[in-house]
Amino acid sequence: MTGKLYIVGVGPGHHDHMTFRAKEVIEESDTIVGYETYVNLVQDLIEGKTVHRYAMTQEVERAHQCIDLAKSGKIVSLVSSGDPGIYGMAGLIYETLAATNWNPKDGLQVEIVPGVSALNSCASIIGSPLMTDFAVVSMSDLLVPWEIITKRVEAAAQGDFVIVIYNPASKKRIHQLVDTRKILLKYRKPTTPVAIIKGAFRESQTIVMTDLENLPNHSDQLGMISTVIIGNSSTYTYKDLMINPRGYKSKYNLEEQTNPNLKIQ
Image (cartoon, rainbow, N blue to C red):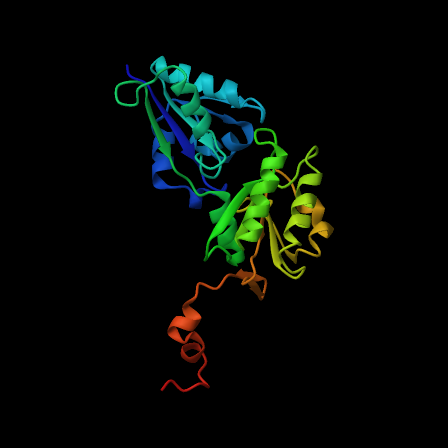
C-alpha cells in the first residue's frame, strides 16, 4: 500500500469556510495529526480515525511522525489552521523531507491543501483593509531574530504598507508589539486605524477597532489567536469598518456615480 501525506489548511475555524478539498482529503485519510486546538476544529469530521494530538511546541515531532506514518502506508492528514503554507507546517515538512534527499516525482506523495489564512479571514470581518499592497509580519522571535523583525517592520512602515501582524503577543512575548508601535509612530499618525481580531470565525470571536495611539489600551485582546491589522496613510474607518481605497475614486469619478445629488455630465 502506498501512503500519502496531506498538509491541510482547515481555514479560520468554521466549517463553512473550509474548502471542499480540505474536507475531501480529511475524509480520505485514515490518520489525523495536528496541534490539539486544530484537531478540535475538525473533531466531527474525524470519528473512527487514528488521531495523534500534539502540544504547541512539538512541531518537529509532528513532522517526523507524519512522514513516518505516510511512508508506512498510511493516508495522513496533518491539519493546520489557516493556510499551512503561511506560518504553518508546510515549510517544516518540506525541510525535513529535503534533508533526506526526497524526490517529489517518485518519493513519498505530498500535497498541500491550501486554506483561508488569518489575513484573509480577519480582513473580511472588518471590511476591506488589504485593497492595496500590504506586508505580513510575525512578532514571534523564536525562529527569526528580533533585530531582523524590527528591520522588516521599519521597511514596511517606510513603504506605507498596510501591516498584518501575526502572533502579536503571548505570556512571554510582551515588548514586541510595543516596540513595533513605536517604530510605526515614526511614520504614521496616531489616528491610523488599527483592528484587533481575536479568534476569527470561532465562537470566541472578538473585534476591537482602535488606532495606533490607543492600541496599548487593548492588550487584553492580544494573544496567539489574535491578528492585528494596521492601516496605512490612506486607510480610514466607516461605521466600524476599515477601508483601504483601491484607487477607483479618481479613475471612475466614484463620488459622482454614488451620490444622487451630483449630476454626471
